[in-house]
Length: 293
Image (cartoon, rainbow, N blue to C red):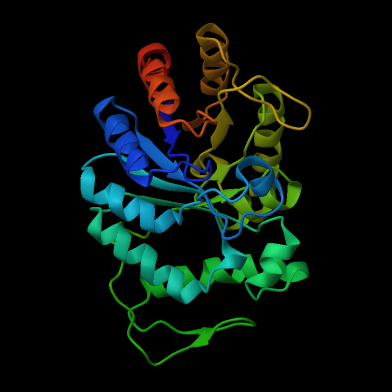
């Protein structure tokens, strides 16, 4: 099982350079991937957590990280597609993939905060349909020499699109979410499934559902790898977590590995870069050797 680490762009850290430095240290420590998150406004649970403090744009931050690193994969956990024009997003993602040497992993989701989605010009009730179409739009632009698309939200033809992603066949699109529709979307369209905050028993049930949905669409579930994002915290109502003690964290990590999880993405859940660095060092020391084994 591989390990990923959240760069905490969603935690109101005052110094963004500290997040880039954290990514560099993750690479040095042998962590496989670093991950960023996506909100435009500080609203809902985001405001409750950080108030008016900085929430850094994910792809911009990953561009700085790409320039300072060479190996670590660069992931989004997750981009909320109804916040984005999919053509512009495809351009930005392809550019980042080329600049980084083919390291981008695009986790995507439909979003939950109605006020924010409406402020960005998308119909909240249609966010699932918009997301499905946006995935198709990006793949068409990334893979077709003469891209053409005729949909409800996007239409284009007769124009070249470049650069194409460095990764072949294209940038992997991983579907985030814990709901049945999210699992169904992963089975239909995803290059992977990435839920958030599910303890091993619940994740095992989700994987069984993923396999069922994949069979229904004629896909091999073995080709839809599972990753999961978890926090270093005590479990609380409505959100499970890895725990706070190394022994508890290691026990849960081993349970995820036994389920066939490909990547465990860990968040230190702090606005203090020193605490995040300490958590990263603990993960590299205590969890990474067992995960690799």
